[in-house]
Amino acid sequence: MSTLFLKNADVLVTMDADRREIMDGALLVQDNIIQEVGTTSEVKAYLDSQAKASPPDRTINARGTVVLPGLINCHHHLYQTLTRTVGTGRGMVLFDWLKTLYPVWAEMDGEAVYVSAKVGLSEMVLSGATTVADHLYLFPNGATLDDEIRAAREVGVRFHPTRGSMSLGESQGGLPPDRVCDSEAHILKDSQRVIQQFHDPEPYSMLRVGLAPCSPFSVTTDLMRESAALARQYPMVNLHTHLSETKDEDRFCLDVFGMRPVEYAATVDWQGEDVWFAHMVHPNQAEVKWLAQTHSGVCHCPSSNMILASGIAPIREMLDNKVNVGLGLDGSASNDGNHMLGEARQAMLLQRVGWPGFESRADRLSAREALELATRGGAQVLRRDDIGSLEPGKAADLVAFRVDDLAHAGGLSDRVAALVTCTPSRAWLSVINGQVVVEDGQLRTVELDPLIERHNQISYGMLERAGVK
Image 1 (cartoon, rainbow, N blue to C red):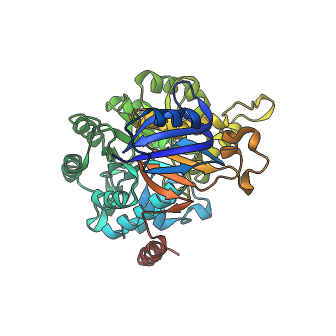
Image 2 (image 1 turned 90 degrees about the horizontal axis):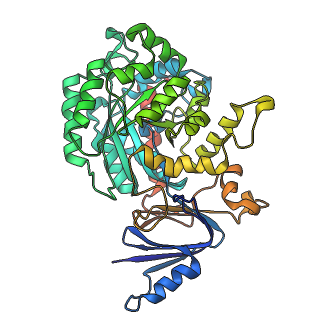
Image 3 (image 1 turned 180 degrees about the vertical axis):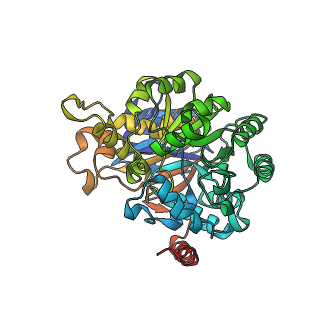
């Protein structure tokens, strides 16, 4: 049994049921589980009371930092690190952006998926993420979900990969070209394979697989229904898809299905606590209430929604209606960045912009609510009761950010809010499943320079073969 004693944090933000924030905070970890949380003197007294216990194997002095539960990214496309700025630099909206990038993504192979996943996950971990849900929905040239799972294991992150899919090509009235789509028989067979090979439903699991048909405009109704039925044969296999992201999607669903996206999701049995939707920018009031009543989750992706001009999701209304809402970065080509703390800041700012003029309220979305989306909220969306807060019995996933640096000078009156209102920082410390992954702001599990070099070689090659400049 190994023990880790973290002490002297300026503030330890528990995100527990009482939302306690502990000054001079400390916690004790044994193996991969939090044993004690309190002030430094309280946790030290607990240690001293264990007469037969040996001193902690590792003690970390966190003075000058704010300690948080590890941040949780509920929606991503890791392979898109290969195509940053393509389309976004020119101001494209979603459908045009996708049509531009599908031919480039068709040039990927297994190595491209592995290397891009390792780059994206490394960047996210350095920004405070400890749990990442990824949505890989095209598998050209022999690529498989296995490729990004290998990368996640090497980085050391808690991973929720989803086996995505596209089956409705242009010849059938869908958006993607036929060459990046797959047969539904193969999709379902491989979905079952990755669940049986990789999915771990047990508490403290480091890897849980989900099923994720890409969107209403890229898969058939049959695949939506059959994927849901397959997922529900296994414990804790969640369902994920993009929904209600743009007005173009609204029009597509009305033209093809005769109903809005949320109504369509309900008709294919995509509702309930095992379902979470990315984006949900354009639900109406009745649909927000439906999300709450069915306990269906939402992943808010503010940067992506801004850069692709999709709109402003009604997150304040969702929270007021008790919808489960988490936070997502959404790709690295529909955001171009992988900074979880920065995304919490964007969520806070965008909700305030979305409530303009004389009706503006300072509490439209507070800094603490933004952090809650990225911690406790994400855990609820992913159906995890073992992460998202710092409490005895929870997984030892925690991050610390320095607040005694240049970027936070003058912000010490509220160190917690300063994490979001000031310039987003790199994580100073990250502990995932009890293992120190980031220390003194440096990632300890990956050698970054050769990884970046190989990643850029792959990216340039894909763009060149696809004829994109």
